[in-house]
Image (cartoon, rainbow, N blue to C red):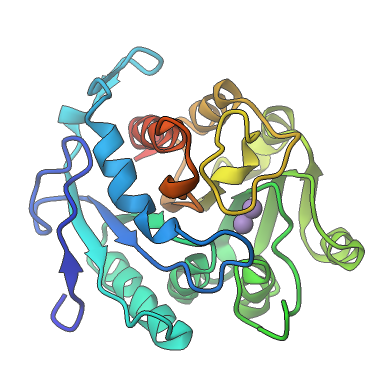
Length: 287
Ligand code: MN
Ligand code: MN
């Protein structure tokens, strides 16, 4: 990755292979400058890495262990802080490289806007053959937010605009503006409040597809994930979140992100710990 630079902020549990030998690539994207309420998600990736050392490498749920995976943690992508456009370009380039080399990408946010740069890249390769599973408390389908076109509140709308034929599913949504729900009615498939049952209902439809998962930690109730910039009461439990990843066992997931973890708003590090455990289960379930 010649023109891309990374800072080492530790490595996710057992992600100790080099880039060439790994088939799963973890990248931290410490971007948090379009966040609308409480900033701080730039420290999400390093905090998730640190929390991962409190986990076992073995998953009793899946009877699989991280030692059997070839993972490389690149560290955090160096970004020109404050420059949204340039940052999105660098994120896209990073994903381009990972896809071109036939590897699977795991992107740790950072704010949700990073997903635009990532999916711009994935949609170049997979076009309308990609299914996007979006887990979030918020619709993120605004046309603009305080005059900004690129924001964590517009990200899925901007992704949809890249290819309106893409199949997009939203889960656990409980906050948004009226016209965003109207938009979803016409163009995507949105499930309110719940995650597990709706996901079960579409598994048959997506089991042959290439899938990208974008997981906003605020889909969980703030009781389970207080460490996030825009907490929204009424969310799912950590047990349901784990079940979500277990339901997708051996599905064709080509990439994923976990975004909006904000350690400075966390309590006892429980949100970072949750994100780390979710990531372990995701890796063992479908990567
Ligand atoms: Mn979001
Ligand atoms: Mn959200």
